[in-house]
Length: 453
Image 1 (cartoon, rainbow, N blue to C red):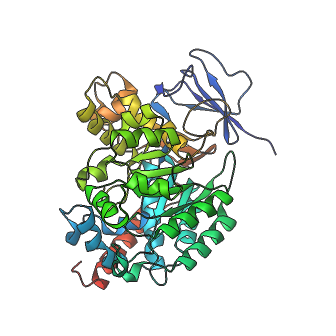
Image 2 (image 1 turned 45 degrees about the horizontal axis):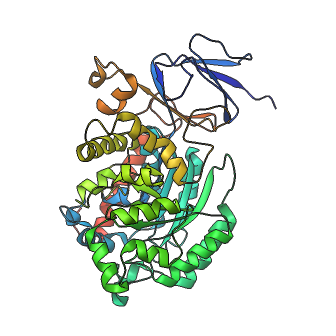
Image 3 (image 1 turned 60 degrees about the vertical axis):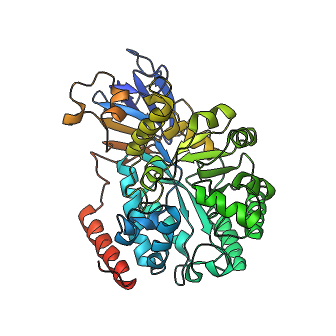
């Protein structure tokens, strides 16, 4: 079969070295970066005029909870910090059905795709009765949209009756968790360059799982060549819980469970002291910065520059749509720029830092060297943005304008060499019908929880 060669020609701007003339895509890969004014080294079959587009590597979302698109701006959870917020929402989420998750996942993925995201990671840790095949449901949604992903098989085993935070109705037996984790790794986990779907193991948090489950998950993941993920050091409440129940701070607890390694990335990573940052960097633990969620829940500030300087890769995640209330990764990159600049100063954090976190940093957290950058030999995952809205009028630097002027939506997105977003729309998707069904499911979920919709 003949493999087509496409020249994405002469972009308005591109986040790549020596590629002002564009890039050539052959099959699923980038095969050439074209210098300004030059022609491709070999003939091409198709030319796409990118003179009106800013071209980025496909954005990478490191942390999400798809199911939470059903509980955005949820009345019982408004204006609460993390622990009371979770306690308000656990009873609502306990009513999730397979059809609800299917809708929630599709909405989250479409929103991410429209924001320029090509690689996603979802942390699904909620398995009430009837939702045991939640990850399989997410796999179906991903394959329908052609997106690249690492789905993390989350888990909660420590209920409030056992000293944890979640109620009994949303936790699982640890034998069932481990059996399903092994099933998913065997059935879905792809390894190596170009992998479209990976599985990682992700016990939810120190306050919702036992030490035994953390250790067993780590051992299984490493036997199967998979990665590990969890929430860590998100709030002061978590640190206090760890000290009370384990006698250790979160990083010490993680180390005691053999979780400090370069095959681990953690979400949030806010409440680390200077010594802990050094230890995390030496171990190569990745950190997913979730600025929108951290600000809405007032959880604190991720010290991204110190973490990077210590050796930890740093990427971005939108986190759950019930704490961020959005699944927009280009918007999250802007939030990261603004929050980190407020903390470090305007001269220490620039738009290229935030774009790096949203691309290359995310790839490093996932252990991927084949995505996250635009260079020959890498996967053809690209996000193309236009600067035609009034918000961009008068902008001088196109790359800076994406974040400073607040880009919200990509015009085109390519994944593994195939266009998955065209003119801002997902081909063949009836978006109005999808959103209508999702809204009805959200209202019904609240009704089942005894709350007014």
